[in-house]
Length: 306
Image 1 (cartoon, one colour):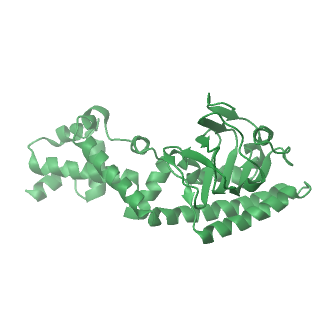
Image 2: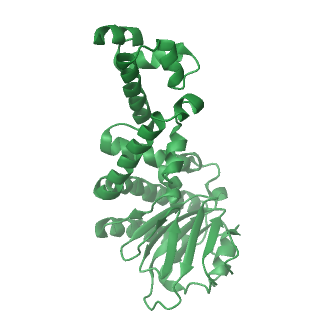
């Protein structure tokens, strides 16, 4: 494999071949022990795209990984949750001497067909986190996930029967539920990173609302804010809601109402002119949102202020 990538890995069998592993015991699912193989020789950085879900826990991994916009440190346990089509950039440290540990669980979407997880897996926002960050585990959290992964590994090596799919999926749902809990914890414990994000959101909204973009482009979309910060919309909203009690859309509306109050109290502009400057095509839409947030119409607010 060379650095002229991104390189798309279409099947679990191909993934095993690239890693120099035996053929998978199941064509649609695999469990790999990170200590059982040596990373392949890669000439420079490479970007990989998988056509399957990948849940992995890595420690002391001799590979520099850029997970979206963030480089990851493998001195501690790190959990990655990647969905089909996401990109992961990596570069192997050929001079490293430490042996990596951890595991990789690979699930082809077809394995989930006709199960509740096929629909529910899309509700786990952290599968969109590849645009920002992985989950850094405490020792206790790592031990919990290792225990469940071990059960999946045992079932993976068990002869396939009519119960195999249900048992593996049940354990997968447990891992995903724990991961969701641990991500919520990370929102709180990684306060420096989180507070920086909050400050950047506030700065972005202030700049946007003080520029001509508001009148020309309308209110900023949640996706626009998230993309500027290299976050998934769901991750950003959950982080803000955990730390501030308001999701991204509510932050946008709050900034909008603050700007509207400034104009209503400090200018002679008509309500229609203010609505236009705030990016609304219709006065009714502005008035409805303002009243929903303040319990007053724009005119009532102006009168009460004066």
